[in-house]
Length: 253
Image (cartoon, rainbow, N blue to C red; front, side, top):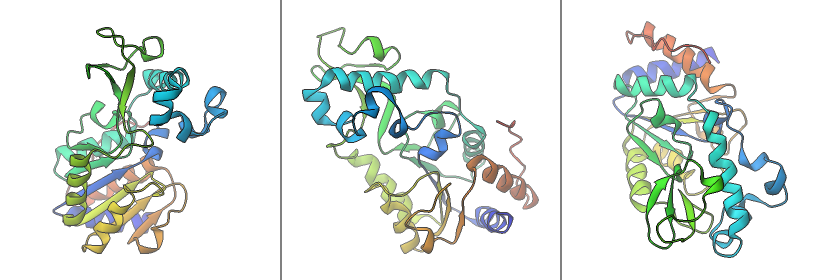
């Protein structure tokens, strides 16, 4: 890991435009369960069945129960060491933006500002009928709009829906023009988000991938590390200090 981490640190120190792309592995290090491995009701159905426009329209009871559990799970989750390091790197100008597949809002919770949420957010719900927007807290017991009685749904992209056009377009622009693109905790199996690192590489950017398992783009990357994101970012942060960039100094955990 040290050789690849050292190369990544050197590239970060010289890069004028670094984009970070985060997936589920970023959040599981905070203890957030992967909903695909959940048991109970969602063990009886595929995510595509419950997290879909079809379920919203035809099976709202199970849809609301599924998302109620997902929203509730966020209650005790805190940003981890990796989130804190990324937020500090942004403040110091080492990272220009974070593009994320995650819907938990943990990047923003720790201070990251330039965050592009490709799949929306679980922190808000909106009414299907009157479009009113509410905080998502308590959704497990309040799945109907207090204004009109319409169905409340999380402000996430469901199966059967397109990604937000503006967010996707801006993310493509960022990937197309960056000097360094870092993937953290994504299997790179979900389209069209997985085209972003490929586009960055094709347009001359360096590509580094940190993920517990192999990805389809490992072969084209400039560096690949299969281990904990927090450990890698902490090591890179220390190496950046040797390059003249002060270490973040975030606590462990």
